[in-house]
Image 1 (cartoon, rainbow, N blue to C red):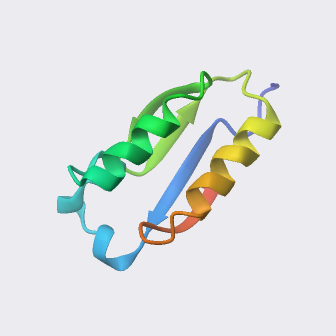
Image 2: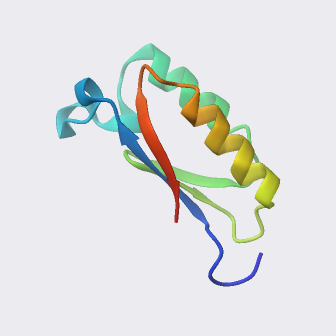
Length: 84
């Protein structure tokens, strides 16, 4: 992957998950923990912080699309997803 292409996925959360105390993708809720366990099965995922998933520079565009689609289906948690 060349410079300038997205290497991170920024997540905006539903209202009830958007407060800093919930800690977004690092929340203690079992559903969020399971979601993160699935995300880290992608070898390209470098790390996860409360509002962002960082991927290797060499991550394939198909992998990015796959992760984005997976996150968008989590409507109970995710309001929107944006590539950075």
